[in-house]
Image (cartoon, rainbow, N blue to C red):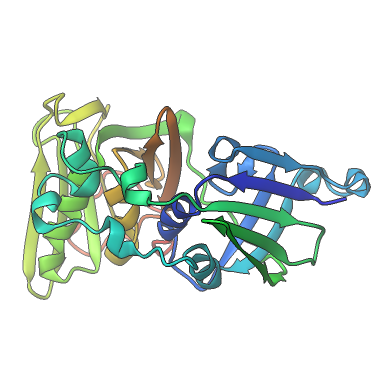
Length: 311
C-alpha cells in the first residue's frame, strides 16, 4: 500500500512556491494528513496519506508523519522539465516599482505569477511515496507527454524548529509584501551584515536600518493604515538579524501579496507571507529568525538569546 499520493494540476505552481525556499541543496520533507511541508492539502486536486499500521507502536510524535530529506535542486529541475523557467515570471523594472508581477496584477496590469496566462499550458504533477526509504516518484504530464522521475530520499536530520511565542508577541505588523521587499533591497547599498528592526507605539513607528562598510541607511514607515494594515506594538522593541538570511526570503516577498511581521519578547522574528494562488486559494510561507547579540553601542530594549541569526 502506497504511503502517500497527491495530484496537482500545475507543476509550475509547485515550482514557484518551492523556489521560495531554495537555500540549500537538500530540503527536509514532512508529510502529514494536512499537507507536505508548507504545501497544504488544498493545493492538490487529490491528496492521500495513510500512515502504516505499525506506526501506532512508534513514538506519538511520528505516528502521523513521514519524514525524509530530498535534493531540492534536483526537485526544482524535475518540476521544470518541460521547459518552464523563471524568465516567464520575471518582472520588468517598471513592474518592480509597483511590487513586481503581483503589484502589476493589483493595479489591473499584467497577469499575476499564478494566473494561467503566466503559468502557460497546465502540467499535471503526480507525487507518490511508497514507504520509508523508497524514492519519491514524480510523474509530469503535459500535452499528452508523460515523464516519470524517481528521486532518492535520504535519512532526515534532527532540526529544531525556532519557537515563536504567539501568546507573548512584542509586535505584529501586516503590510504589503512588496514594500518590505523594496525596503530590504534599498538597504543593500551599504553592504550590511546586520538588519535592525525597530518598532514603537509612538513616532517613528517602524524602521528598518543597516550599517555597513559603505555607510548606513534606514527606511521608515508611517502608521497610516493604508501602509500598515495592522499595527500592534505595545512598547518599543529593537532587534538585529543577519541581513543575508532575511534577504534570502526575497523570492517569497516578491510573490506574496501580504506579510505578517511578528516578533516575540525573546526577539524571535517571524515573516509569514501570504501568497495568492488564484481563485480563493492561498499559501503561507513562514520564515523565522533568531536575533543577533547586540553590539557595543546598540540600543536594545530586551535581553537577546546568545545565538547567531538563523532561518
